[in-house]
Image 1: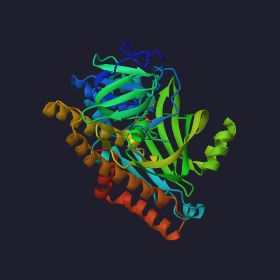
Image 2 (image 1 turned 180 degrees about the vertical axis):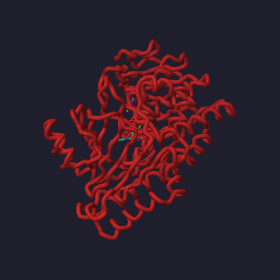
Image 3 (image 1 turned 90 degrees about the horizontal axis):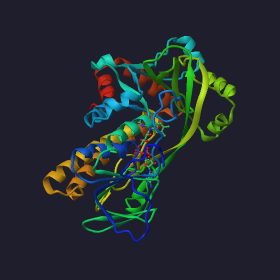
Image 4 (image 1 turned 120 degrees about the vertical axis):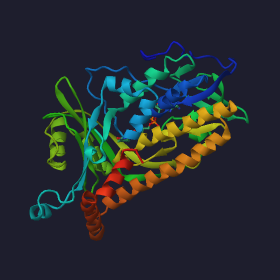
Length: 424
Ligand SMILES: Cc1cc2nc3c(=O)[nH]c(=O)nc-3n(C[C@H](O)[C@H](O)[C@H](O)COP(=O)(O)OP(=O)(O)OC[C@H]3O[C@@H](n4cnc5c(N)ncnc54)[C@H](O)[C@@H]3O)c2cc1C
């Protein structure tokens, strides 16, 4: 058990215990599950949160975690609306005002046309905003939400247990836990991530496709002042991305993402620190501040997944359990928060109208809203991935003309920016 163990957590019990009745059971207390639980606090529903491992408490002196997310304005507004934003900001987060993208050009082109002609830079000022988004450690987001839902009287936490089975009937679902306990509920929300047990047990179906690239995330200490820019350079092997992180005790931090063939990343993962720093400086663009120290690294396979159905009976999915996308534009959890918003707004209305949080009309409306929206973003990310991982000369020409034009077409640029910010 972690230090954050709730007084209302349930200890392991035997098979003979009668089912515990709860209005809603959320499987997964990660970023999306935590957001769903927090948004439902304004009801008097009894809520169970099942989480196999709650995060360690925040330590302001500790180095940044490896896993971070770029949160857009849509997510910020949602987290403000459920009163979790100030808790997040009280820990740590790094705003960025500018976002740049370009494709690495052959050296000869750079000599002939200096100054990255195909570079497009988006600036918050163009849409009258103070920032484009925030880079935040995933654990900080999870903890900020947990601080809201965990102490609530109507929330019961089931920690260090997993779901073994779901038995559904017309009016309820029995959730069988790995400790032998059974929960009986009107609605199960599967927010248990990409390899969702809920999705499998409820037979919601899955379409999936693995990309040829993996993403290596590298947490580093750099020279120089805090940066207000995040950037991505596309290369034929995959993008190289820079995400600024907040300073800790006067040292500047960043998260680098190196997309490449899995074999290449395996070699990089095995390198000692000095060799990896050399490889980073050889491979990343000159705009990367000098890397002083590697704090952590990890490689993640990239798989596009989409649940064929978002709900069946009284079981519904949200976040990565319903969809995973290529992270090259940092949209995964932003989509998950939109799921959480639409789903919980629907549940609040269903409770008001019918008293039933698992009302099938509410779940159908959620699926009709979110499945096409998530599919659109998935398709867009696929478009980027295939367009930029292609060495055919005409495709190269078109994408560079596209990048150059994007920098000059102000109305189109504003529209792209608003979409990326989660504002349209
Ligand atoms: C390299 C990389 C970079 C990314 N960068 C960004 C970014 O910049 N911006 C962005 O928006 N997104 C980004 N993403 C995507 C983002 O990380 C995911 O979309 C997000 O983590 C999904 O949150 P979730 O809560 O749905 O799932 P998860 O984060 O996977 O959380 C699931 C939770 O459920 C728990 N759990 C799992 N199974 C069970 C079970 N059986 N019983 C109980 N509990 C269970 C887990 O312990 C976990 O706490 C990135 C992804 C990758 C791989």
